Each structure stands twice: as C-alpha cells, then as structure tokens.
Image (tube, rainbow, N blue to C red; front, side, top):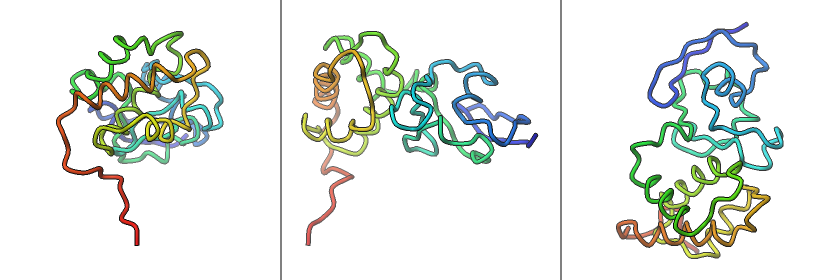
Amino acid sequence: MKNVNFTVNGQSIEAAVEPRTHLADFLREHAGLTGTHLGCEHGVCGACTVELDGAPARSCIQFAVRCEGAQVRTIEGFDDDAVMQQLRTAFNAEHALQCGFCTPGMLIMARDILQRHARPDAQTIRHELSGQICRCTGYANIVKAIVAAGQEMPQQTESVAEIPTE
C-alpha cells in the first residue's frame, strides 16, 4: 500500500492505495463518486474522463498514486460551474442524452472544448470529440448541443487553441 494525498472536487483526500489502483477505481470505490464511468478500461472510449489539474484525462489509465498533489474534478464537482450548467441545459434541449453512460465524460470534454474554442462549429466539435464514444446517439444531437451552448457563451476574442501558421 502507498499513501496518496490529492484534492477531489475541492476536498482533500488522503488514502492508502495499492500502487496498481487506477484513478477511476479509486474515485468510484474509495471516494464514492460513481459519476465516473468505466467503459473500455484502456483509455479509448472516454467514459471515464475527469478533469486532472485543469485538463481532461482518462481516469481508467491514470494510477491514483500518480495523482499525488493533483487537483481532480469529476462530474459531481461541476455543480456550480456556469459553463457546465449551460451544457446541461443544451444537452437537455437538443435531446443529446440517451442511455447516459457516456454523458459525464462527454460533458467534461465538451466543457473543455468551450473553454478552448470561441463558439466552435460542428466540424471542430466532431474533431475534438473523436476520443469520446457514444453508442446510442450517433453524435448528431451531442454536437448540436455543444454548438448551442457555445452560442450562448460570452464572445471570446479568439480561440485559445488556435495555432498561428507560418
């Protein structure tokens, strides 16, 4: 066992864990945060996406012991987040929810997209979501929801993710 200390959804957590324990398993089994879903357990489907030190990360391939000192935010940690609220409203309005299994990871990734791109278009969103798998919706309504949420966001001066061409 190894002691680990990091912050989850604003709360400091200290625990003794097996070095092989993945962050997703720790969040679900030790912290009781079941909004993080496990799909492929290979980092491919995106169902386990959480925010790790401000960026989306696959918690099924991240060891909990490697999160020492890190800031982790799960879907449960976005209750008061204005961007996430806008996304939830848009997902509901655009019927972007079906079984809901991919939804927590999809919402975290969508929030990241809106943080990095000013009013992204459907093509940008499809590209950015290429690592998220939804087996129900075919993505059309998810993309519509993110576009709609982006239109409701305050206008940014430029996209953070744009890279100048030489």
